[in-house]
Length: 360
Image (cartoon, rainbow, N blue to C red; front, side, top):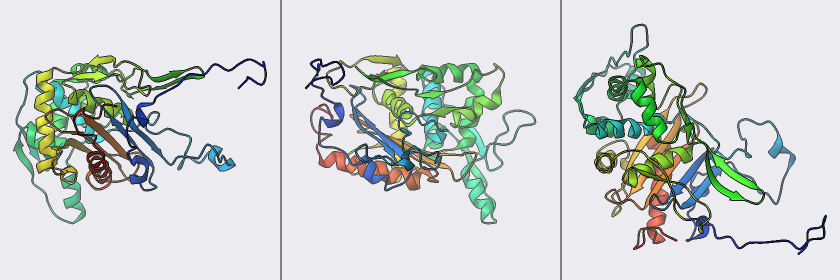
């Protein structure tokens, strides 16, 4: 094998990818032709076990339409790494982690009328309010609730109050602890590197209660990539330690960031288990796996909401983390949860949860 231009002997290296370490998980197939992305990680080692972006393309059959400016399909966009979206309620895990780290689990009144962060701003309401209004009914709200029920019911009104109470400076620092605004290298090779940004957050004014409230519910100026939300969930799964994701199985696991205390991470996992047993994530309650997770339904400037779900299993000591995004999929519980549940079931069948915890 020679370099055609310089007639030099090619230097090659054997490469073992984490993606091929075990039987493959059908991430792309379960997206069923919809636009979106799936990321599956081993949270303790950083192994990338699945990385799917849809629609994709066959590099062996390139056609002109792949390179057209078709913004609806965009098959060349790796949505898992380069796509940036409002994360919606999946981001409540980041706000909850900060509150738990501070020993702060307040009770808030969550009425149907919602919460106004500051004078002149619009009320932040729960989705039940809009569903009731659409059907000509009134909805009285969740009442006075705490953090556990707010996560299970995915209450925007609760988390908006939580974000405002924690304050913009604390919320911005917390988001940055999860590597937002940083560039992370996933893979380096002779022809270049594959990099991504977990997400972006602008600098907030110290007294900006509105932005603090919006960020706590994963809206406003906050954006996240599917890999970024997978890493956020992986940090919670790994007792607050975010391990750098790796595609090269020969790379040693590397600590990327310390995001939250181990005690707060463990407490949060127990609350996220409640989301699956008694909340919006019920569809992911795979028997025998003790799945924990968080749904998300993110508002967008155009079209139907994006659907999200992040999950980890088993909740007591997770060995797999799954992040699913379905573009314009509507409710996360309806579109993203079934994809994650299908992947977790298949992972169980293939032995990913056996002794060794998904380790290649």
